[in-house]
Length: 170
Image 1 (cartoon, rainbow, N blue to C red):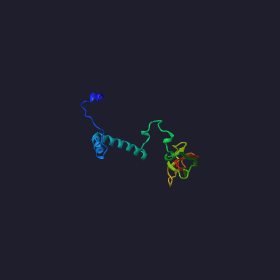
Image 2: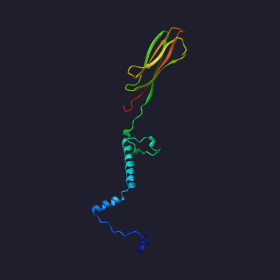
Image 3: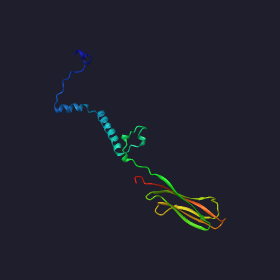
Image 4: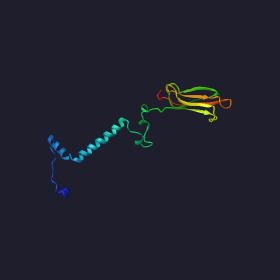
């Protein structure tokens, strides 16, 4: 006991017996409130991370720049972005006539918006009607024009535009 002079107040213990009751008693002595709460917090923290990864709820806000590597990305789960494009038709109509023109998106694509524009002097008194609306079936844009007989002889130009998007994965 020479090496343990500074521990004189401690009692000497023997190696604990290995029977089952003694093991449970030793475990119970170390089972404090702090140990239980720390173990529970560790379980919740690790379980929450695993749930977030498995549920796919980790987004761009949770990822640092340049931290993802190619092996981290499953390309089968990526969603392709739609390609947006514009289709248009330009034409002229003579005075005293009316017409409708439709611009369609490609088959299977979706119309996002459209417009009808005059080309030239919009203040011409001969323009009696000029409007546009999504065509029947929502895959194109319809322009309706009526150019009256008032004003100087000639024709007037119009343009119908459709803004479309393809469906990714087609």
